[in-house]
Image (cartoon, rainbow, N blue to C red; front, side, top):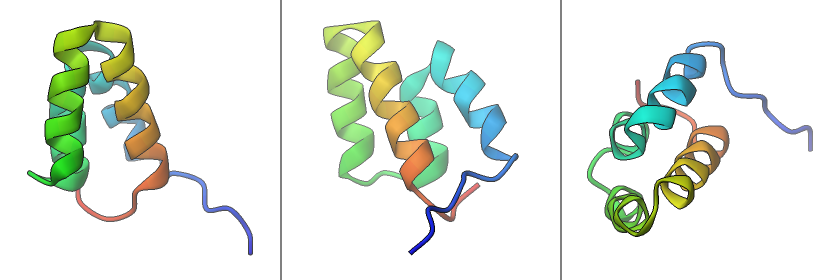
Length: 64
């Protein structure tokens, strides 16, 4: 099975994730568990929040 590449519309989310990672996750997944996990990671440190947000954006389809 071929890996699906994120659409170009996700580029905006990648940039948003640099500044406010939970917002990018919210736009991609809503108020799901991933959003709350990202909030906790962002509180613990900016970099873990960004990495998690980028991972969610690259693995998720839909939303936005």
